[in-house]
Image (cartoon, rainbow, N blue to C red; front, side, top):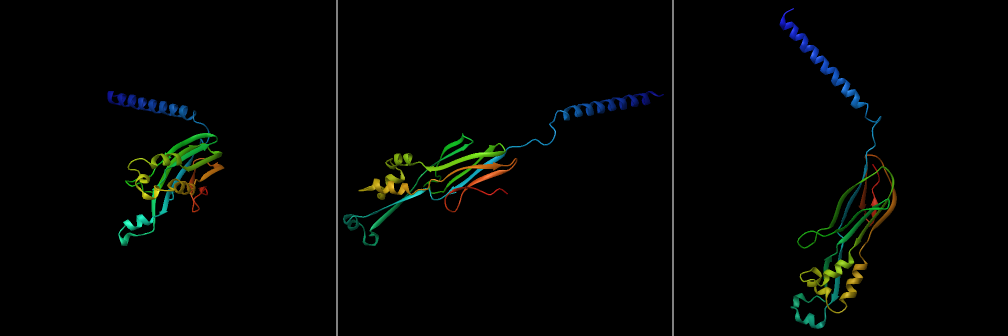
Length: 205
């Protein structure tokens, strides 16, 4: 037998041995995998958007104030609008997962409040508590700040201003959700603000 033939046989034997070893390693690794497909987590998605997180304060001008205005600007009633930030809290099975302030964006803070959050949830029946409430204390603290919306608006000042502001703040919605929700593995449940301004779980697809 030639040296070339002997060398070829040795190479083929080596390749065959490596292939056999690779198969044995693969079988050993596969034997460690659990039987069947493992369950994956599901998700709770919060897709909240509202343009109603604002208050409008109106007051009647005094005769003196009207007289000081040009004739074409003498409107007996003035109204001003101001944004109010909200606080979002989310609790799942008694464990708080989110507690944060949601603030208006934009130079004049005129954009709607928007929330886009995703939380991982173990499959099964879970008690979901979501609260989306106006931060009244922080708004009141901002009322007198130099340069703030409320500080610069005539309707937020003058006689009876505090009562007018309080009455407007009480009209703000504070939607909340508290219910047991079924989560399927690998699927998402979505919380939205519906047409009534309430928090609602979208039907599962």
